[in-house]
Length: 324
Image (cartoon, rainbow, N blue to C red):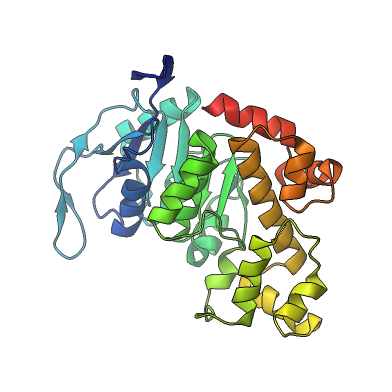
């Protein structure tokens, strides 16, 4: 499908969301919310539909049923989303299996949410690649798929044309990252705001396993907000600890407990986020953007882009423009 935008031919990205009997409602709803809801405020957006390879009405939990488009192939699809998959279901419908394999080997992109990576693993698509799933299924995943490089304690993993999110809500994190890749920082932030969520969450799954998440406003959270607002200043971790009325040791420990990373790592990630946004949305020089993002200079910014993103700022800007 092609539509005219400002005298420029733009191919609409067609998204297929895979449903099946007893599909997980939460992950299915995440995919629909992220990719299928019309967003007239954007000139470019996805065309998405929920499909099934089962020629029947689907049964869900709580005596609910679901009727959606019956599909025989994925030839019109650009991005396939597997919201979840029953980990006990080892037999896969031959038509579904062949359609997904054909789609992937012909250059299609696939992302899985939560246990959806089990379907991709059983099709062999993840062999030799990095992947993840919900922490409660990690041991079973590693045992069943020894050829897959399982990544612990991350919210999602992307490699080549495959993306896998960890448990449930991290589906939104992966989805927003896909949106940012396809349409840029502005679209991703807008969708995140609509969901009342940050455009990027730091840390991994450990922060959500049997641990109380800090709630409410306090000097610690207010200090982090202040740091983001003043990122262009020459901030130090000692300065942040003092502002939070905490000793440096307590501040570092609080960071580890809350985000599963050091304050320095958190600060660099915030700087990179701001730099990416400016690279995508302005024509400012690299030196100017480095200052706006809190880096000492363009050389330091380039070093951190290479270290954490494996790409230079100039390459990042060029890649974004090509995605428009």
